[in-house]
Amino acid sequence: MANQGNKTARVLITKKRSGAEQSRKNAASNSTQAKKSVSVVVKKPLVLVVGAGIAGLTAVRAWARRGRQVIIFEASPHIGGLASVEKITVAGESFYIERFYHHFFSKDKNLKRLLAELNLSKSLVFRKVKNRFSRTLVHPLDFLLFAGLTALPFWKLVKSLALRDVYRFFPRQLTHPSGFRLMMYKKFGEAYKDVSLSWLWARIHARFSLKDIIFGETLGVIEPSFKVVLDALVKRLSSLGVKILLKTPVSSVDKLIESHFPERIIITTPLHVAKSMFREFKWQTPEYRGAFNVVLFTQRPISEYYWDQSIGGGKENSYLVIVNQSLLNRSLPVHVAYIGGYVSSDHWVFRSSDKQVVDRVVSELGIEDDFIGYRVFKTRFAQHIPTVSYLSNMPPRNFVYRGVPVDLLSFGNLVPWDRGVNYSIILS
Image (cartoon, rainbow, N blue to C red; front, side):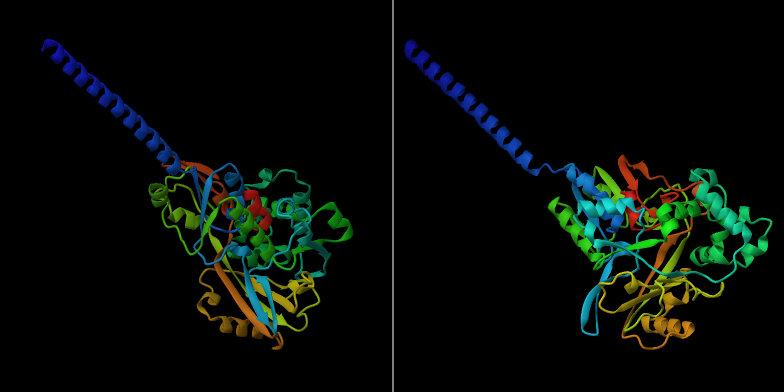
């Protein structure tokens, strides 16, 4: 009986051991399955981008190539920002135009590199064009200022100087601007007197090359339209797994962090919009000028000049220029002229219908009513005003917010450069 009891005990122990071993095997199996399931749900590090303009679309390429998951949020229904396009149908012809005209300079190296990457180098065509500038008188000090800025190798030497400082002994030249000072007034309004000379330095050095000075300036254009660049960018980003969410505004960076847990956030909006997204934002943001473009489609050019700045008149007139884009972009099936300017955010164009704007512009400029179609494009935040005081406390390009690195890629903190496609690519 004792032996029988020992056998029973051994059987029970063996069964218990077998059960324990089976439990360990099950636990190991469950652990392996859990690891497998975890490996499936673990996501790539996430980079979030606010704004699908050129800066946003080009800034994400490097992150996507590094294996990051990238999501771009865009408030509007289209990509491209100020370089966005719209389909036009007039006189039986359908084609695309930029909402705000673009031309490019021979020194736009960043644009050329991007086009080469997208296999679009041949779409950038340079042509010599005729330009006509303001007929107003210039002051001898204007020539000295331009010569000095042209010869100056470093922009930081004039960062703290403004036109007000240069013309302090010639106050009438600021009160009654002419020449390039009138152009700056129409771009920046009364604040033009306080714009840093570093901005003017950058415009001179970015635009003119020795070849242009000797042989005359040539300007470049993307043919048939900038849509080919936007399409190629979207295709490239899609191949890298980048998601673009249109009609998806972002109001709070805190909510982005709490809902998405990103590795990095890139913001490309105007700075005052970026500021509104943060609970705490200790830096100064610049004032902005709005802009409008009346685009007329005609059977013949409005002017023989590509860039015709003789229309503007004095300070009382808000029109900066007529741009006969079809004289540069010869792929357009009809003549296309942009008439526009920079205006304050409370200007009458923002309170008027498109037809009212067109009727007033055509009447004030004495343009014959023979156009076959039109479009009106407006934005309240086209151009930041880089005053000396603003540059002393502008937002940094990079900072950390709630433990997340933030890249603030906006024209407003791209000193000394200005807005534009080439500069947008610099931001990236």
